[in-house]
Amino acid sequence: MTKIQLLDLIAQHAREIVPGLDAHQFLASDRLADLGANSVDRAEIAMLVQESLGLSVARVELFGPKNIGELADLFLQKLDAG
Amino acid sequence: MPAKSVVTGMGVISAIGQGKAAFVAALLDGKTAFDTMRRPGRQLDSAYIGAEIRDMVVPLGIARQTLRGASLSAQAALVVLQEAWTEARLSDVDPRRIGLIVGGSNIQQRELVLIHEGYRDRSIFLRPTYGLSFMDSDLCGFCTAQFGIRGLAYTVGGASASGQLAITQAAQAVLADQVDVCIALGALMDLSHWECRGLRALGAMGSDRYANEPALACRPFDRDHDGFIFGESCGAVVIESAKSTEHRGLEPHAILCGWGIAMDGNRNPDPSLEGEMQAIQNALDASRLLPAQIDYVNPHGTGSTIGDETELKALHACGLTDAYLNATKSLIGHGLSAAGTVEVIATLLQMQAGQLHPTRNLENPIDPTLNWVKHEPIDYPIENALTLSMGFGGINTALCWQRA
Image 1 (cartoon, helix red, strand yellow):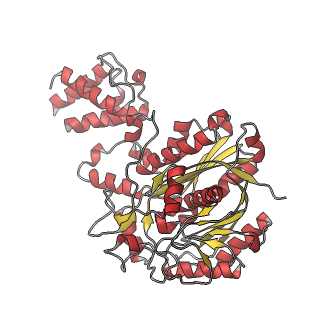
Image 2 (cartoon, rainbow over the protein chains, first blue to last red):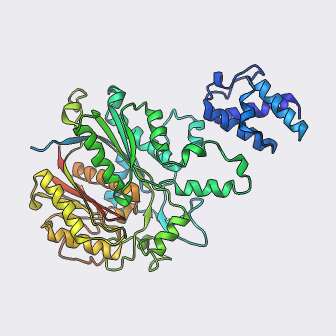
Image 3 (cartoon, rainbow over the protein chains, first blue to last red):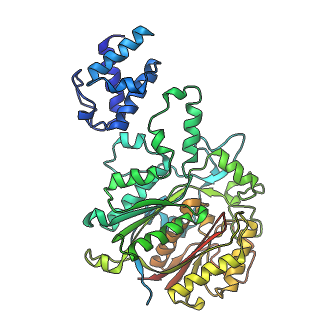
């Protein structure tokens, strides 16, 4: 899976959870909080991505990434390690 | 005079109609919607009969993402609160002076079963929202967030009397000046097949007798009754002091004159004549009304053999034999947590219409001496009405209403 594909996956799940993002063009520098996702929304999005990838990441590790690009990197790293 | 509060807004949804206008029209027409239930999670090697809401229309402007995380009970709450909120013009009230009491506990059982079953083999991916939503009080959070309510909000549980209990608590909050306006919500009880199984096993839910004839199964006060039939419903009632309404120039639906609550001191589902009489008497005393002044009784009337009998004995014992009677549950089924609120709404809408709705399947009343509204609606002006609820655990509630 490429980083672009992972960003698309994150965007797809973000649109499922947060209102008003249907037409938003996602960038790697986007922060989910700035897009209107509260902490529960962010947990939901991260979980949906994990389920789509068949991958489980410790909650504490998800606190690290500062934007969706870094989140995609974290997931890519876990996929490579798996 | 005792302190009184008034009703300035109502919202309702049931299997026979969404919104007050559709609901009262369906009641007066004697419409029903009983069938073998089809909602996912309602059947397991079973064919329980009930009345399910089809095609719920949610208010415009609610994001699909909000609805995605909303249980059936939460969606129904949103619908009825929107209707009641608009009618009572609550956007003109200081949100810090608005409260919400949610009547019902363990209301989202089917939703929980679906989640448990859906994630059985993939529990590590359980939706984080489940950590919030498994609690009934999530409904308080969900609704206060949607409507910006900043006063008080909590849930109250009284089994099938929860809906009436919520109204009494909302009135208390208003009369104690904790808030100016308090909304009582009779939450939609979303039964799973497990609760249906338990209620059948207990002998509370029918119908063995009419398993193949869903339209005939729900028959409160009829000689052939064999238990209650479930029906999804939800209602919201806006309670406030008469003074609070003056600023907004509203015409109240009715006055809540007084109420009574009494316990049987009995955990079991069997009713108590003494407990029911006590609740009725307390309500009449609090309202300073005599039994002969009550024109209409909206009874609990579930279709339970002993429950129906005991309730009619209580009406006799309290001198309420002149009042007209019908059974709202014969049309919409038993909403359990929602029943008390929705039946109050049915009562106030009949009061406004000057008409009483028919009682379905009341072929041979177990007590033919009472003033039943049987097959056809009747025109009748109601000045004072009494609404009754009883719940497992021995709770009895009675509310007295007066035309505003």
